[in-house]
Amino acid sequence: MHDHAAGQGNLFEHTAQAATEEEDVVVPSRIPSTSPFHQPRALTASERERFRRIAQESRKARQSALSGEGPDPIHEINKPRFDPMKLMAQRPATGLRSLSLFSGGGGLDLGFERAGFEHAASYEIMEEAAQTLQKARPEWQVHGGAEAGDVRNVDFRQWRGQVDVIHGGPPCQPFSNAGRQRGHLDERDMWPEFVRAVRQIKPVAFVGENVPALGSSKFSEYVSENIIDPLSGQYHVTPIILQASDFGVPQVRKRIFFVGFRNKRVANRWCPPRPTHHWGDAMIDQGSDRCMGLREALGLPDIGVDDLSPTIRSSLTGPRHTTSILNSVAAQRKFESLEIWPNGVAASREQARAFVAKNGHFRLSVPDVGLIQGFPEDWPFVGATYMVLGQIGNAVPPPLAYIVACSVADALLK
Image: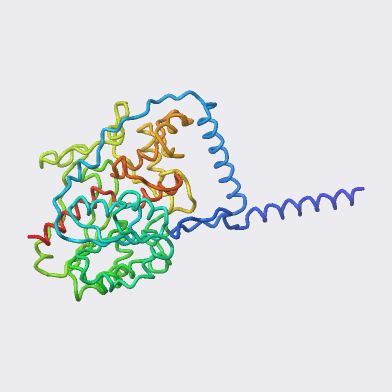
Protein backbone atom coordinates (compact mmCIF):
# COMPACT_ATOMS: atom_id res chain seq x y z
CA MET A 1 0.00 0.00 0.00
CA HIS A 2 2.79 2.35 0.93
CA ASP A 3 4.62 1.79 -2.37
CA HIS A 4 1.36 2.18 -4.32
CA ALA A 5 0.56 5.42 -2.51
CA ALA A 6 4.06 6.69 -3.17
CA GLY A 7 3.64 5.83 -6.83
CA GLN A 8 0.38 7.72 -6.95
CA GLY A 9 2.04 10.70 -5.27
CA ASN A 10 4.78 10.73 -7.89
CA LEU A 11 2.16 10.49 -10.63
CA PHE A 12 0.22 13.43 -9.21
CA GLU A 13 3.41 15.48 -8.87
CA HIS A 14 4.41 14.66 -12.44
CA THR A 15 0.95 15.56 -13.73
CA ALA A 16 0.93 18.85 -11.80
CA GLN A 17 4.41 19.72 -13.05
CA ALA A 18 3.40 18.94 -16.64
CA ALA A 19 0.31 21.14 -16.29
CA THR A 20 2.44 23.97 -14.91
CA GLU A 21 4.94 23.63 -17.75
CA GLU A 22 2.09 23.64 -20.27
CA GLU A 23 0.76 26.88 -18.79
CA ASP A 24 4.20 28.46 -19.15
CA VAL A 25 4.47 27.67 -22.86
CA VAL A 26 4.03 30.70 -25.10
CA VAL A 27 0.89 30.36 -27.23
CA PRO A 28 -0.33 32.55 -30.10
CA SER A 29 -3.40 34.73 -29.79
CA ARG A 30 -6.62 33.26 -31.15
CA ILE A 31 -7.93 36.73 -31.99
CA PRO A 32 -7.07 37.74 -35.56
CA SER A 33 -5.44 41.16 -35.86
CA THR A 34 -7.15 43.70 -38.08
CA SER A 35 -4.17 46.02 -38.14
CA PRO A 36 -1.05 45.33 -40.22
CA PHE A 37 0.95 47.31 -37.63
CA HIS A 38 -0.15 45.23 -34.65
CA GLN A 39 2.44 42.96 -33.07
CA PRO A 40 0.99 40.65 -30.39
CA ARG A 41 2.96 39.99 -27.23
CA ALA A 42 4.40 36.52 -26.63
CA LEU A 43 2.14 35.40 -23.76
CA THR A 44 1.92 32.07 -21.99
CA ALA A 45 -1.30 30.10 -21.77
CA SER A 46 -1.84 31.19 -18.16
CA GLU A 47 -1.24 34.86 -19.01
CA ARG A 48 -3.65 34.70 -21.95
CA GLU A 49 -6.23 33.04 -19.69
CA ARG A 50 -5.87 35.86 -17.15
CA PHE A 51 -6.39 38.53 -19.82
CA ARG A 52 -9.31 36.54 -21.22
CA ARG A 53 -11.03 36.47 -17.83
CA ILE A 54 -10.51 40.21 -17.35
CA ALA A 55 -11.99 40.87 -20.79
CA GLN A 56 -14.95 38.58 -20.10
CA GLU A 57 -15.69 40.25 -16.77
CA SER A 58 -15.50 43.68 -18.33
CA ARG A 59 -17.72 42.65 -21.24
CA LYS A 60 -20.27 41.14 -18.86
CA ALA A 61 -20.31 44.27 -16.70
CA ARG A 62 -20.71 46.48 -19.77
CA GLN A 63 -23.59 44.38 -21.12
CA SER A 64 -25.33 44.51 -17.75
CA ALA A 65 -24.90 48.28 -17.58
CA LEU A 66 -26.21 48.88 -21.10
CA SER A 67 -29.23 46.67 -20.45
CA GLY A 68 -30.08 48.74 -17.38
CA GLU A 69 -29.06 46.11 -14.83
CA GLY A 70 -25.90 47.80 -13.60
CA PRO A 71 -25.39 50.43 -10.89
CA ASP A 72 -27.29 53.71 -11.28
CA PRO A 73 -25.36 56.35 -13.27
CA ILE A 74 -23.56 58.91 -11.12
CA HIS A 75 -22.31 61.37 -13.76
CA GLU A 76 -24.23 63.63 -16.10
CA ILE A 77 -23.48 63.44 -19.82
CA ASN A 78 -20.72 65.98 -20.30
CA LYS A 79 -20.86 68.98 -22.64
CA PRO A 80 -17.28 69.77 -23.73
CA ARG A 81 -15.95 73.32 -23.59
CA PHE A 82 -13.07 72.59 -25.94
CA ASP A 83 -13.60 73.10 -29.68
CA PRO A 84 -10.53 72.06 -31.72
CA MET A 85 -11.84 73.86 -34.81
CA LYS A 86 -11.26 77.20 -33.07
CA LEU A 87 -7.55 76.36 -33.15
CA MET A 88 -7.70 75.81 -36.92
CA ALA A 89 -9.28 78.85 -38.56
CA GLN A 90 -9.89 77.98 -42.22
CA ARG A 91 -7.27 79.71 -44.35
CA PRO A 92 -7.93 80.81 -47.94
CA ALA A 93 -6.89 78.39 -50.66
CA THR A 94 -3.15 78.52 -51.22
CA GLY A 95 -3.15 76.89 -54.63
CA LEU A 96 -0.81 74.23 -53.20
CA ARG A 97 -1.69 70.53 -53.50
CA SER A 98 -0.76 67.96 -50.85
CA LEU A 99 -0.41 64.18 -51.05
CA SER A 100 -1.00 62.18 -47.87
CA LEU A 101 0.83 58.95 -47.05
CA PHE A 102 0.13 56.72 -44.02
CA SER A 103 -2.98 58.86 -43.56
CA GLY A 104 -4.56 56.96 -40.66
CA GLY A 105 -7.63 58.67 -39.25
CA GLY A 106 -6.75 61.95 -40.96
CA GLY A 107 -4.94 64.18 -38.46
CA LEU A 108 -2.44 65.54 -40.98
CA ASP A 109 -5.01 65.56 -43.78
CA LEU A 110 -7.44 67.71 -41.78
CA GLY A 111 -4.69 70.07 -40.59
CA PHE A 112 -3.40 70.65 -44.11
CA GLU A 113 -6.94 71.15 -45.44
CA ARG A 114 -7.64 73.85 -42.84
CA ALA A 115 -4.31 75.50 -43.73
CA GLY A 116 -5.55 76.02 -47.29
CA PHE A 117 -4.00 73.05 -49.10
CA GLU A 118 -5.90 71.19 -51.80
CA HIS A 119 -6.08 67.46 -51.07
CA ALA A 120 -4.67 65.40 -53.94
CA ALA A 121 -5.02 61.88 -52.50
CA SER A 122 -4.51 59.71 -49.42
CA TYR A 123 -2.89 56.29 -49.07
CA GLU A 124 -3.86 54.25 -46.01
CA ILE A 125 -3.41 50.50 -45.55
CA MET A 126 -6.01 50.04 -42.76
CA GLU A 127 -9.42 49.65 -44.35
CA GLU A 128 -11.37 51.19 -41.46
CA ALA A 129 -9.12 54.27 -41.38
CA ALA A 130 -9.51 54.70 -45.15
CA GLN A 131 -13.29 54.47 -44.69
CA THR A 132 -13.07 57.19 -42.04
CA LEU A 133 -11.34 59.50 -44.51
CA GLN A 134 -13.84 58.75 -47.26
CA LYS A 135 -16.79 59.29 -44.93
CA ALA A 136 -15.33 62.53 -43.63
CA ARG A 137 -14.58 63.86 -47.10
CA PRO A 138 -16.51 61.99 -49.84
CA GLU A 139 -14.86 64.17 -52.49
CA TRP A 140 -11.33 63.08 -51.53
CA GLN A 141 -9.43 60.48 -53.51
CA VAL A 142 -8.63 57.77 -50.96
CA HIS A 143 -6.61 54.64 -51.73
CA GLY A 144 -7.33 52.22 -48.90
CA GLY A 145 -6.79 48.63 -47.84
CA ALA A 146 -4.08 46.03 -48.12
CA GLU A 147 -3.66 46.47 -51.87
CA ALA A 148 -4.52 50.01 -52.95
CA GLY A 149 -3.49 51.58 -49.64
CA ASP A 150 -0.09 49.90 -49.28
CA VAL A 151 2.51 52.46 -50.37
CA ARG A 152 4.93 49.66 -51.19
CA ASN A 153 2.72 48.88 -54.21
CA VAL A 154 2.73 52.45 -55.56
CA ASP A 155 4.84 53.91 -58.35
CA PHE A 156 4.87 57.50 -57.14
CA ARG A 157 6.23 58.90 -60.40
CA GLN A 158 2.59 59.16 -61.48
CA TRP A 159 2.28 62.10 -59.06
CA ARG A 160 5.31 64.02 -60.31
CA GLY A 161 4.29 67.55 -61.22
CA GLN A 162 0.85 67.11 -59.66
CA VAL A 163 1.58 67.76 -55.97
CA ASP A 164 3.53 70.44 -54.15
CA VAL A 165 3.84 68.91 -50.69
CA ILE A 166 3.97 65.33 -49.39
CA HIS A 167 3.03 64.71 -45.79
CA GLY A 168 2.74 61.57 -43.73
CA GLY A 169 3.47 59.79 -40.48
CA PRO A 170 5.15 56.44 -41.20
CA PRO A 171 4.27 53.82 -38.54
CA CYS A 172 5.78 54.85 -35.23
CA GLN A 173 6.00 51.36 -33.72
CA PRO A 174 9.64 50.73 -34.81
CA PHE A 175 10.67 53.70 -32.65
CA SER A 176 8.13 53.76 -29.80
CA ASN A 177 8.36 52.00 -26.44
CA ALA A 178 5.11 50.17 -27.16
CA GLY A 179 6.55 48.94 -30.44
CA ARG A 180 9.80 47.68 -28.84
CA GLN A 181 12.05 50.23 -30.63
CA ARG A 182 13.58 47.79 -33.13
CA GLY A 183 14.10 50.50 -35.74
CA HIS A 184 15.12 49.25 -39.18
CA LEU A 185 14.81 45.65 -37.95
CA ASP A 186 11.06 46.12 -37.61
CA GLU A 187 9.14 45.11 -40.74
CA ARG A 188 6.80 48.02 -40.09
CA ASP A 189 9.56 50.57 -40.71
CA MET A 190 8.20 52.60 -43.63
CA TRP A 191 10.51 55.61 -43.63
CA PRO A 192 12.36 54.22 -46.67
CA GLU A 193 9.00 54.23 -48.50
CA PHE A 194 8.32 57.82 -47.50
CA VAL A 195 11.77 58.82 -48.74
CA ARG A 196 11.18 56.88 -51.97
CA ALA A 197 7.96 58.82 -52.56
CA VAL A 198 9.75 62.14 -52.05
CA ARG A 199 12.55 61.17 -54.42
CA GLN A 200 10.17 59.96 -57.12
CA ILE A 201 7.72 62.87 -56.93
CA LYS A 202 10.21 65.66 -56.15
CA PRO A 203 7.71 67.97 -54.39
CA VAL A 204 8.74 71.48 -53.37
CA ALA A 205 8.38 70.48 -49.71
CA PHE A 206 7.55 67.57 -47.42
CA VAL A 207 6.56 66.97 -43.82
CA GLY A 208 7.25 63.62 -42.13
CA GLU A 209 6.05 62.96 -38.58
CA ASN A 210 6.81 60.44 -35.85
CA VAL A 211 7.29 59.84 -32.12
CA PRO A 212 9.92 62.06 -30.44
CA ALA A 213 12.08 59.00 -29.69
CA LEU A 214 13.13 59.11 -33.34
CA GLY A 215 14.98 62.31 -32.47
CA SER A 216 16.94 60.69 -29.64
CA SER A 217 20.59 59.64 -29.75
CA LYS A 218 19.50 56.01 -29.97
CA PHE A 219 18.19 56.59 -33.50
CA SER A 220 20.57 59.34 -34.65
CA GLU A 221 22.40 56.95 -36.98
CA TYR A 222 19.09 55.65 -38.34
CA VAL A 223 17.87 59.21 -39.06
CA SER A 224 21.12 60.12 -40.81
CA GLU A 225 21.26 57.00 -42.96
CA ASN A 226 17.55 56.61 -43.79
CA ILE A 227 16.08 60.13 -43.83
CA ILE A 228 18.63 62.97 -43.97
CA ASP A 229 21.40 61.50 -46.17
CA PRO A 230 19.15 60.06 -48.93
CA LEU A 231 17.47 63.46 -49.31
CA SER A 232 20.30 65.87 -48.55
CA GLY A 233 21.33 66.23 -52.18
CA GLN A 234 17.89 67.57 -53.13
CA TYR A 235 16.38 68.90 -49.90
CA HIS A 236 17.22 71.03 -46.90
CA VAL A 237 15.76 69.09 -43.97
CA THR A 238 15.10 70.37 -40.45
CA PRO A 239 13.77 68.19 -37.60
CA ILE A 240 11.68 69.90 -34.92
CA ILE A 241 9.92 68.54 -31.84
CA LEU A 242 6.60 70.13 -30.93
CA GLN A 243 4.37 69.76 -27.87
CA ALA A 244 0.62 69.59 -28.55
CA SER A 245 -0.37 71.63 -25.49
CA ASP A 246 1.78 74.52 -26.77
CA PHE A 247 -0.83 74.87 -29.51
CA GLY A 248 -3.99 74.46 -27.43
CA VAL A 249 -4.48 70.67 -27.39
CA PRO A 250 -5.18 69.61 -23.75
CA GLN A 251 -2.74 66.71 -23.78
CA VAL A 252 0.93 66.04 -23.07
CA ARG A 253 1.98 64.83 -26.51
CA LYS A 254 5.28 65.50 -28.24
CA ARG A 255 5.93 64.73 -31.89
CA ILE A 256 8.94 65.11 -34.16
CA PHE A 257 8.50 66.62 -37.63
CA PHE A 258 11.02 66.45 -40.45
CA VAL A 259 10.36 69.48 -42.65
CA GLY A 260 12.16 69.60 -45.97
CA PHE A 261 12.33 72.21 -48.74
CA ARG A 262 13.83 71.78 -52.18
CA ASN A 263 14.78 75.46 -52.47
CA LYS A 264 17.45 76.73 -50.09
CA ARG A 265 16.05 80.27 -49.98
CA VAL A 266 12.63 78.92 -49.01
CA ALA A 267 14.22 76.72 -46.36
CA ASN A 268 16.05 79.71 -44.91
CA ARG A 269 12.90 81.80 -44.61
CA TRP A 270 10.85 78.99 -43.06
CA CYS A 271 10.01 79.75 -39.43
CA PRO A 272 9.32 76.77 -37.14
CA PRO A 273 5.97 77.22 -35.33
CA ARG A 274 6.17 79.15 -32.08
CA PRO A 275 3.89 78.22 -29.16
CA THR A 276 0.49 79.90 -29.19
CA HIS A 277 -0.69 78.51 -25.83
CA HIS A 278 0.63 77.78 -22.36
CA TRP A 279 -0.35 75.51 -19.49
CA GLY A 280 0.00 76.69 -15.91
CA ASP A 281 2.26 79.69 -15.34
CA ALA A 282 4.55 79.05 -18.32
CA MET A 283 4.83 81.83 -20.92
CA ILE A 284 2.19 84.05 -19.33
CA ASP A 285 4.39 87.10 -19.92
CA GLN A 286 4.74 86.28 -23.62
CA GLY A 287 1.08 86.78 -24.38
CA SER A 288 0.09 83.26 -25.36
CA ASP A 289 -3.40 81.91 -24.71
CA ARG A 290 -4.11 79.49 -21.86
CA CYS A 291 -4.49 75.84 -22.80
CA MET A 292 -7.42 74.10 -21.14
CA GLY A 293 -6.90 71.27 -18.71
CA LEU A 294 -8.53 67.91 -19.37
CA ARG A 295 -11.51 68.29 -17.05
CA GLU A 296 -12.26 71.80 -18.29
CA ALA A 297 -11.92 70.69 -21.91
CA LEU A 298 -14.42 67.86 -21.39
CA GLY A 299 -16.84 70.09 -19.51
CA LEU A 300 -16.56 68.19 -16.21
CA PRO A 301 -17.36 69.73 -12.81
CA ASP A 302 -14.58 71.58 -10.98
CA ILE A 303 -13.03 69.31 -8.32
CA GLY A 304 -10.27 71.73 -7.39
CA VAL A 305 -7.64 70.07 -9.57
CA ASP A 306 -7.06 69.94 -13.32
CA ASP A 307 -4.17 69.08 -15.60
CA LEU A 308 -3.29 68.15 -19.14
CA SER A 309 -4.24 64.66 -20.25
CA PRO A 310 -1.41 62.12 -20.32
CA THR A 311 -0.37 61.01 -23.79
CA ILE A 312 -3.13 58.92 -25.35
CA ARG A 313 -1.99 55.43 -26.23
CA SER A 314 -3.13 53.86 -29.49
CA SER A 315 -4.96 50.60 -28.95
CA LEU A 316 -3.26 49.23 -32.08
CA THR A 317 0.40 49.77 -31.14
CA GLY A 318 0.63 47.70 -27.99
CA PRO A 319 0.74 43.93 -27.49
CA ARG A 320 -3.02 43.45 -27.60
CA HIS A 321 -6.13 45.25 -28.84
CA THR A 322 -7.85 47.04 -25.96
CA THR A 323 -10.24 49.89 -25.28
CA SER A 324 -7.81 51.49 -22.83
CA ILE A 325 -5.79 54.61 -23.62
CA LEU A 326 -3.31 54.15 -20.75
CA ASN A 327 0.35 54.13 -21.71
CA SER A 328 2.09 54.02 -18.33
CA VAL A 329 1.73 53.75 -14.56
CA ALA A 330 2.38 57.49 -14.33
CA ALA A 331 -0.53 58.10 -16.70
CA GLN A 332 -2.76 55.94 -14.51
CA ARG A 333 -1.87 58.04 -11.47
CA LYS A 334 -2.58 61.24 -13.37
CA PHE A 335 -6.01 60.04 -14.53
CA GLU A 336 -6.79 58.94 -10.97
CA SER A 337 -5.91 62.39 -9.63
CA LEU A 338 -8.28 63.88 -12.21
CA GLU A 339 -10.97 61.32 -11.27
CA ILE A 340 -11.20 60.09 -14.85
CA TRP A 341 -11.41 56.40 -15.84
CA PRO A 342 -9.36 55.71 -19.02
CA ASN A 343 -9.99 51.95 -19.31
CA GLY A 344 -12.87 50.45 -21.22
CA VAL A 345 -13.54 53.61 -23.21
CA ALA A 346 -17.21 53.57 -24.26
CA ALA A 347 -18.46 54.06 -27.82
CA SER A 348 -20.72 56.99 -26.86
CA ARG A 349 -21.26 59.40 -23.98
CA GLU A 350 -24.59 57.75 -23.21
CA GLN A 351 -22.91 54.35 -22.90
CA ALA A 352 -20.09 55.84 -20.83
CA ARG A 353 -22.62 57.28 -18.36
CA ALA A 354 -24.48 53.96 -18.08
CA PHE A 355 -21.29 51.91 -17.55
CA VAL A 356 -20.29 53.09 -14.08
CA ALA A 357 -16.58 52.63 -13.28
CA LYS A 358 -15.76 50.60 -10.17
CA ASN A 359 -14.10 53.57 -8.47
CA GLY A 360 -16.88 55.96 -9.47
CA HIS A 361 -14.64 58.08 -11.71
CA PHE A 362 -15.85 59.62 -14.96
CA ARG A 363 -15.60 57.10 -17.82
CA LEU A 364 -14.29 58.42 -21.14
CA SER A 365 -16.12 57.94 -24.43
CA VAL A 366 -14.80 57.82 -27.99
CA PRO A 367 -15.94 61.42 -28.70
CA ASP A 368 -14.08 62.55 -25.57
CA VAL A 369 -10.85 60.84 -26.63
CA GLY A 370 -11.19 62.32 -30.11
CA LEU A 371 -11.46 65.79 -28.58
CA ILE A 372 -8.43 65.23 -26.35
CA GLN A 373 -6.50 64.45 -29.55
CA GLY A 374 -7.79 67.58 -31.27
CA PHE A 375 -10.41 66.08 -33.61
CA PRO A 376 -13.74 67.86 -34.04
CA GLU A 377 -16.84 66.21 -32.58
CA ASP A 378 -18.27 65.38 -36.00
CA TRP A 379 -15.21 63.55 -37.38
CA PRO A 380 -16.84 60.24 -38.45
CA PHE A 381 -14.47 57.52 -37.29
CA VAL A 382 -15.33 54.08 -38.71
CA GLY A 383 -14.79 50.74 -36.97
CA ALA A 384 -15.13 48.94 -33.65
CA THR A 385 -14.28 50.95 -30.55
CA TYR A 386 -10.71 49.60 -30.26
CA MET A 387 -10.11 50.34 -33.96
CA VAL A 388 -11.39 53.90 -33.61
CA LEU A 389 -9.22 54.44 -30.53
CA GLY A 390 -6.30 53.12 -32.59
CA GLN A 391 -6.96 55.66 -35.31
CA ILE A 392 -7.20 58.46 -32.77
CA GLY A 393 -4.14 57.43 -30.77
CA ASN A 394 -1.98 57.04 -33.89
CA ALA A 395 -2.99 60.39 -35.36
CA VAL A 396 -1.19 63.69 -35.37
CA PRO A 397 -3.39 66.11 -33.42
CA PRO A 398 -5.03 68.13 -36.22
CA PRO A 399 -4.22 71.52 -34.61
CA LEU A 400 -0.56 70.49 -34.48
CA ALA A 401 -0.69 69.43 -38.14
CA TYR A 402 -2.40 72.73 -38.94
CA ILE A 403 0.27 74.90 -37.36
CA VAL A 404 3.04 73.03 -39.22
CA ALA A 405 1.11 73.19 -42.49
CA CYS A 406 0.61 76.95 -42.05
CA SER A 407 4.33 77.46 -41.50
CA VAL A 408 5.15 75.51 -44.66
CA ALA A 409 2.60 77.43 -46.72
CA ASP A 410 3.91 80.76 -45.40
CA ALA A 411 7.46 79.86 -46.44
CA LEU A 412 6.43 78.69 -49.90
CA LEU A 413 4.18 81.66 -50.67
CA LYS A 414 6.35 84.53 -49.43
